[in-house]
Amino acid sequence: MILPVLEESMMKRALKTGRISVKMYDLRDYTDNKHKKIDARPYGGGPGMVLQAEPILRAHKKAKGRKKKTITVLLSPRGEQWTSGQAQMIQNSYTDVILICGHYEGIDKRVENILNPLKISIGPFVVTGGELPALMIIDSVARFVPGVLGNEASLEESRVSTDEFFTRPEVLRWNRKTYGVPEVLLSGNHKDIEAWRSEHL
Image (tube, one colour):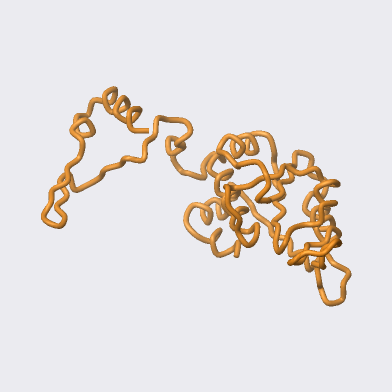
């Protein structure tokens, strides 16, 4: 699930140029179970399966190695809401991020007790696994790595930005109606343009 997304667009260029690097750890490679089983039924009963602690802890140990400035993030629908501020903080403060992707009913609580990770949710909703949230965190952190966006002015967080954009043609005709561009954007007056953008955040 991870690789096809990273092999496109800006993430592909960022990986190719060495601006970022991403490595995946398959939990099945870190179990001593001969069937490569990494989940089991929860104690106390319940409808789903739970990821076992040991494969995650072993994979985490391998991923961390001797790295010093590492942060561990556990993706969870019960975590703290992810923000651009957190993405920027991580990029500025750490060299490596270890993302633990949940699945099934969840993860053995002892993983959290042992690793004390930053527990993160990407939104007030639940998805089937942590892979898509992990991709969103990779993308949002990578944006703050110098050179990934190509143009540092592209960082919305560092400028007045709006979701109201216009481009050519200046006059759009569609379904017998005409749609123009706000005059201020054609004026060349940067002060007025910035004021207009501030009013349309």
